[in-house]
Image (cartoon, rainbow, N blue to C red; front, side, top):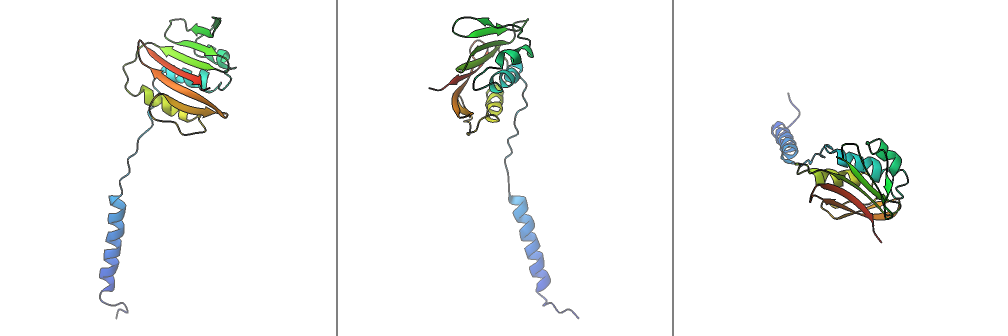
Length: 157
């Protein structure tokens, strides 16, 4: 003979159903991080973000992306790869910018900001212009799509 009251199995069943329904009613929106599809964003990461805040290693990093030589234009150093599909402008301790031809990809700004956020010690806005903090120094990020793609970081003063 059972020592549990007749209502115990019913109570157990209701408790189990409540737990199952609670688990199944929780919805979670997962925004997958876009994969980096742009050579420009990869170059920005490797050249600008990894050498910031001084940009001392930018010239060396640029070689890995096919930018063999930077020319001193007086206000900044500039260079392009052989087929002119990737450009760099860098000014020590101040700015770094990567340019590419136009790309038909609406996720580029999101890719750019997500990539920069991995290097920032403060949260990064999901629209531009945005601020990032690298080694205690604040930079402004911009993605300009007029006439090509320009991924820019400027030291905030």
